[in-house]
Image (cartoon, rainbow, N blue to C red):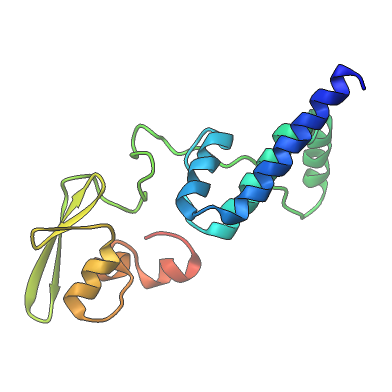
Length: 172
């Protein structure tokens, strides 16, 4: 067997092992792997989506993606039809937004004030999480649940997102 064939087999085996490990990874591990293969953090925490995107990228890196000629032809055809081909999304200004932070969050140190049933509640936005009543919380939803006694979407409760924007999948 030639050296090239041995290297190709080894690479294929490594790719197969990497793909086989994906279903057993946690969301945090998948997000970390996403950042490793794409060179930027994922804004999604959806496990299935992360697994598919990472698997696709691993295969693309190992076997090659579409050729520039094929991409150019797709764009050419796209101009002639009504179909949408995913174009590269505009990159967020990473200097303006802390890496890994939800862009809906106000800057670190901001105090969110929310009146609820005649009482004014204050939550401080931290670099990693939130502070409420002297305790650290990972999510606004947990704080909203603590205040109301029922489950709430934290962004809606603290009016960082409107219901209309949530149903459209956007932000307020």
